[in-house]
Length: 375
Image (tube, rainbow, N blue to C red; front, top):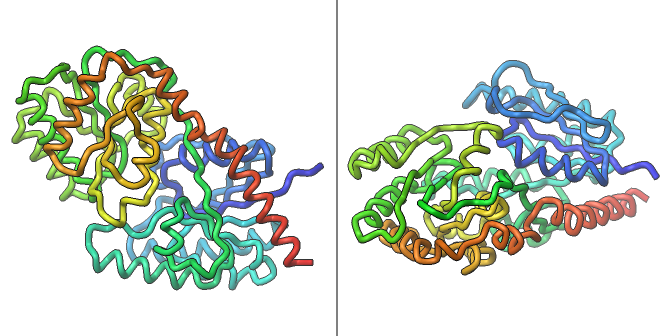
């Protein structure tokens, strides 16, 4: 029996491991084709196209910003729509973007096959900007009938009560499979630095070190990009705490470059402000830490509460003192942690499990419903 074809459309590809790991796993069950505009980072690692997993880039040069970038995405949408009309896809998944309003209009015959996939409402620290982008997205969503989202609260957040919405959790792959050694603490944060208050973890680390630390801290690696104002806050915190011999700010590393950091780390950091716009968002880094056998200190958001427990980590509040207390609690449990036990504890968060048991049945159900509409 011929596999059904699912097409994914994304103007700018960021974090290849998130998206391609997912669709590579999905290609065991479906024919997957990607239509992509540009790579966000030229040195990112991309898989080669395969029989059941094809990748097509249609943009030229590097992605531009602001109005030029908007114009480029506008042209990309027309190119992608022209390709889609010739593909005979069973399902077309559009990653939420600034021009998503146009796809069902440009591809009128395929309009029932479109599914809008979105991950999170706007998380900008500015309330006004969050309101603007959330409203803008709702306008773009108005032409879609089907949606893929990650958590139940997003149904209300995106105003999708009257739409056909499917809730799916993709899962993640481990970054490292090396058993961790729990001797001295080696902390790791990976992710965006925008609006996450990562500088507060450095002050919290300083408080821990000044209050009779049970376990020595060898290093704290911070990996990620952010606007200059957030980089300045982190660098200021490193300078004020005099922890430049422990805290290392790396900037962006590609998917191969992060592996040694995950191999060595034995404490994962998932820190962010516990605000309404973050609380119901799945924190992918938590799954990556845990699936790599790394116990994790995580802010107690609604989603983190579902996965963090005494076996695999510590929940904290979103302030420096609580971070320090979390380090003390983790230090007391340090010798009892087991990478093997942590990985086993979250095996149902793995990508292979989620795709087989959640994504495949969901996509088959959506395709069947589309066929029923067409008939």
